[in-house]
Length: 65
Image 1 (spheres, rainbow, N blue to C red):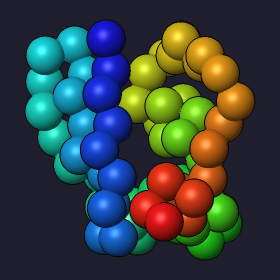
Image 2 (image 1 turned 180 degrees about the vertical axis):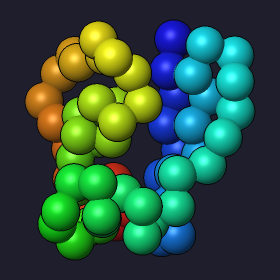
Image 3 (image 1 turned 90 degrees about the horizontal axis):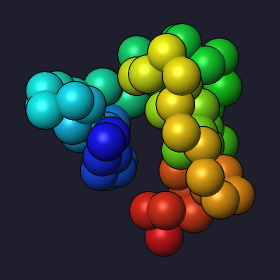
């Protein structure tokens, strides 16, 4: 299971029992768009080879509101 916790500076990730942080700049560079326009599904695709994408993707900007 993968857990994502978003804040204004990036995402705290727990992936297969390993905790790490993806910084905002890294996410923007990898996805090539502003952080608040990135979706949770796009972040999951950075983290996992075959992510379990359930539900509708949510923009970081909407998650942080």
